Length: 205
Image: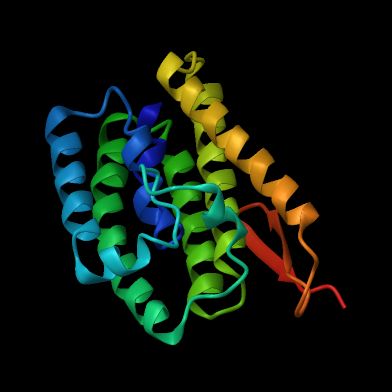
């Protein structure tokens, strides 16, 4: 069930980052090794280094500021995201292929996760949502995968994962407080809703 991290996603990034932390414990060492190597190489690309300061990477670079980022990606960052996403999709195929072959019951959860990651990616790559919102959606999608895997297997969440989720909750709470305290300036931020694995966003008027 620890496979959540493997799909990463933010979306594109998520599609990438989300998977590393959640690689299933029963994933073969060979598949884990291939996935981790693929992800490390993807993050080390110029595109990965460019995007890491803004997108949710599920590593020590993540901070409250990433959840509050009110701006969309720049045109240059969008181009980088497209390249990053393409590489991330190749990495997640390693996990999807393993799930289909060895843990067929989990495969639909990873496929759903991939669809959500792609949905976030398209909104982000087209400049339709700000980075902070994309990062929050990535966290939501990661947690949905964790819940699906836990319900599907009946496994308890590890102490390490529980602590990671607590830290995330603390960051989200802090970002909500800061956002509420800030004076709203500029156009209103869009709000997004998941309907299945489809993402619908609207900007308040």
